Length: 144
Image (cartoon, rainbow, N blue to C red; front, top):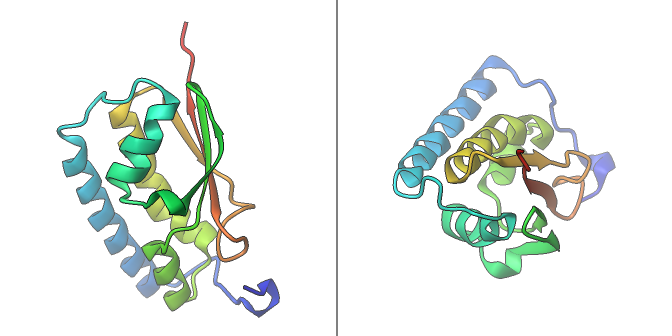
């Protein structure tokens, strides 16, 4: 997409925020119920690809580009048809706001459920619609 034609609001009004919070609630409830039987099921960052991206997020393999995959770190670029991206574009809300609110909140919660040592970060300088995908990094924290 052409960045100059995008006019996405980084500070949505109260009605738009309400819609986004409903989206957060729905995704969060799904995450909580999904986690019930999968608590502590990830032992390495490389396990995250299958359990988190394919099982939880229901992404297809062709929609997850792997930049780096080790036992300690996974860096991906998601190019899936994203419901949060679609909602953001429909509401004209900046994805740096909506994804931080909805997706990042739930993703962090689910990953902590899978393994308390997992750390999730999203690269907000590489996020759709401003880039061709969304880059995320999941690190397995080393605790001594």
